Figure 1 (cartoon, rainbow, N blue to C red):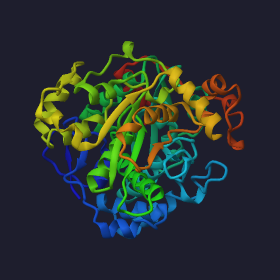
Figure 2: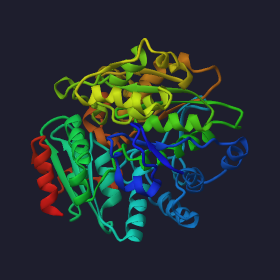
Figure 3: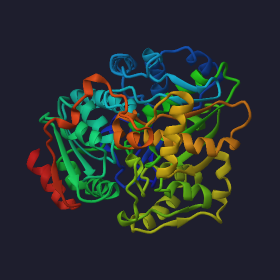
Figure 4: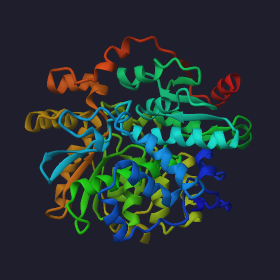
Length: 479
């Protein structure tokens, strides 16, 4: 399988090359030259597979430069009940991503937060850590991972990479904008290969720094800079797997369809759903849910993509979605405009200059219905009311981001064909957002015993202005 850049860079690398590289040299994002098409026979064979076996079957379509036996070993080591052990009481942890039905066979949560950091990011990041270690060892290389997080990517990356041979992590996060639990998960790690940088700004400021450093070809080469944010194709590829697994869990045969509602800030999670559908997974609807930072909802409603500046980005009670410049959105727009890299480069020239683009009158946007997307937004009042309703009606406690998904799923339920089950992709466990849970329910969220008191552990973090050169110096001094 060869890969191309959304902006047209001529080289056609294979998977292991883009695994270590992050952004393409022209600033674009990598995608497969074509999406592999899944036959009915394959769907039938995959239905009864374990998560690890399904991951191997799907990832084999995208990873052709790692021997099959080695890739199988990596999948088997990654997707175990021991790693993903925090399933809800009564749900089957051995399933890795069980469906927790709120209304049997009709409406449920696809559990994605059973990993070590209690967030869906673990589903891809644990695999990424094992892939990095495998490739680096065979090449005799090292890598310095530079990432930005709005809450959950950082801890998932650090827990996946801590202690990994030949890997250092430099993780940027917005100072004071994450929950106390999220900060503690990251900043309490004392591993020598983990470095946390709190940026005095918003997530988008941190993400812009990562892109600026990645676009400095000389610095990137000298200091071997890699990426674990969802700009890294391997993250998206790994997330495709749980859409198939969720489909099989929610349906009785491959003649049926399913709908997914996905809380989204950076568009990586729902981008994986889009690709699963392009591969042939019978998905009737992809419902995108935003919080008050509704850049993506605005696009799907109007055709206008208008990233906000940091000063216009809301600080909300679903902080992992406090994003106003969705870096993965470029992958979807590439497909929307007929995989025309010149068009994408032109559109993102405006975005990278701080502007916007408007496709509302274009033939491309007229095709938006072909991709099965609908969207909606939520607010603090809406997510608090949803947390309360789900707990009172179903006896299930959900986190703030999942609540945005449930609220929008209810709002958009009329767009889902009759009889099609609707799954909301769980984003995190409620323990990560205790303040809002207390507001909604008047009680503390449930928390795994081993994570009690994490906020009281010593923390190690560097406070820094959103300055690209300062971040470069910080990295250079520690490599």
